[in-house]
Image 1 (cartoon, rainbow, N blue to C red):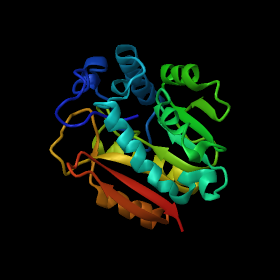
Image 2 (cartoon, helix red, strand yellow):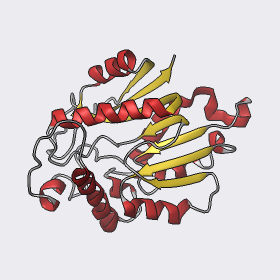
Image 3 (cartoon, rainbow, N blue to C red):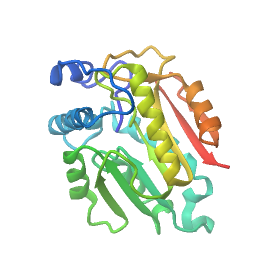
Amino acid sequence: MSVTEQNEPPAFADTLGDILYPSRLPETEGGLDGSLLTRIAGSYDFTLDRAGASPAAVLWRSRRAQTLRFGRLLGLLGRDRLGPLAGAGPVSIADMGCGYGALFGWLRWRPCLWRGTYTGYDLSPRMIATAQQRYGRDRRARFVLTAEPQEDADYYLASGLFGLRLDVPGDRWERWCRGMLTAMAARSRRGMAFNMLDARGRDRRPTLYYADPAPYVAFCRDELGGDVTLIEDRHRLDFTLLVRWR
C-alpha cells in the first residue's frame, strides 16, 4: 500500500488518523501491538469503501504514480524481469502490503511471471477479499491475510507499506519498519525492495512516516548484509531501496 504524493492527496488522507481514531496510543516497547494493527487495517478498509479498488484506496494520487513505483521496485529482479525471454527460470515474488492486488494486476502479463508465482500479504480483510475477487482465479496468485511474511520467496517487494503510521510516535514506527525489513530479509532468497516517503522533501502530514534514506541504506547494508541501490525521486517525494543478497 502507499501514500499520497505532494499537493493533491485524497481529501481524507491528512486527518485520517484523527478522524477515525482520536485517542492517543500509549508508548510500548517492541513492535506494534494487535490493537494498532487492527486500527491500520481499519483505515484501509475505510479507504477501500470510499474509493473502491483504485489507487486512491491505497493513498496514491494516480495510477501513473502507483505504477511508476512498481517499475522502480521491479528493477530488483535484474535479468529475471525478462523471465523465459532471457533464459531465466521461474521466480517467486512476495508483496507485503498488497492491498487490492494492484501489483499483481500490473505484473501478471510481464515475462517475470509467465512461469512464476506471486503471494500478496495484507492485514486488511477487505483488501484481501477484494484482491481474491479480482485475481483469485489466476493460479499463479495467492492472497493471505497476515501482518508478517509467512513463506520464503525469491523476491520480497513492499510499495508504500511503511507510509501510514497514524498517531504512532516516529521512533516506535521506525523500530517496526526495521523489524519488518529484517523479517522480509529472512524470507527472501535473492533480495528485497521497498519505498518510503522522503524526509528531505517538503511534504509533511501528521499521520504519515517520512524517512531519511541514509540510515536505511546503512541498515540494509551493514545489519542485513545486502548490496544496496538507492533510487531517489527527483522531487524528493519518496525513495526506493533495492537490496540484493551478497
